[in-house]
Length: 246
Length: 239
Image (cartoon, helix red, strand yellow):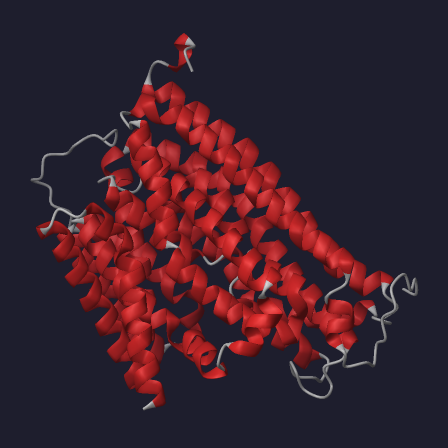
């Protein structure tokens, strides 16, 4: 394990000296490139299939735009959190682990667990280059396991879904709806007891969305349906800022 | 696109699925390898004197907390995403806080239901749109201007974003999902089950907390099926 191709110092706490290494940048940009390529291939495949399932190209484009607009708010929030973590992990690791594959909460928790297993805490005085490398490896392996399980389970689930669709099409129509509602009810309700501000924000965010959707319907403003999520997040997070600093 | 084999909807969807499975698994494998190359380089080739036991202990610590999710999350999200979008979602990340909301917005924008053909295509396109915005904003705001932004953005603002983004997002997404689905019984079932899970079951059996969302999803499906409106005229899944 001693092939010092780059000058790492196990005991140094200058994390950024190795965390911004050019090879890490190369790998991070590689992941970006892979996702861009995947997006292009998928969009082409969807465009080719759409006209055959009564989905005009106009709707295909609209779905792309709606997805892009809806993700502005969530993306910017990820950006803000990612920036805050730059000092801990360096830019390449933050881009791949926080920005892409994982999410801020999972990956920071993983890194913290790994650091603790070496008797250090993130950003603490024992947070050396060695601890950082182990934490980065542990997060990455954990993320890799997620992808591996997805690669292995998806074909199996797909076969299961197909045979169920044949035997019981009514169930197949209901399952995605029920699953989605179940997931988001639970994710929402889990936020409520965290603090009184959390509870208020859930209500403000829900009320804003209801208001914008109502407005979109009354005014026949389709664009508002797409922007509603961004507006609701903005209103709610501003309220959070005011309550937090008050 | 003018080949006669593609004239019917089944054939073109089958083609879409086999294409996305091939592209999806190839790109995901590439992403998996690239994401490991960086840390492998640091750990083994940077003279940091890391022993295999350090790695094993660290991975065990992470696996003890998150190992369950490696399997449970793909199982939970598959019924919502469908097979094509699975390969996008688990590589792009931020699934529940970004990709699924984007998919719901897109489906409601064109009045498509999840799990239908139009719904699946809309989800794939929405995730494509979300990925484009996300990659661009990460590259620009974190990759290029990150170190500068961190010095100008007040830490308080970053702290507020970190702590309060989820409640600010989830309330709105839940409302949008309810309105988009227009399914009264599954909505009531899902909310009731979540309340029971969070305020009754988990306090009694705290070890179930890790499976909370997955269990609510599973039971929402089962109970919604049991209480479904049998009188409603059933429209075929083809939309």
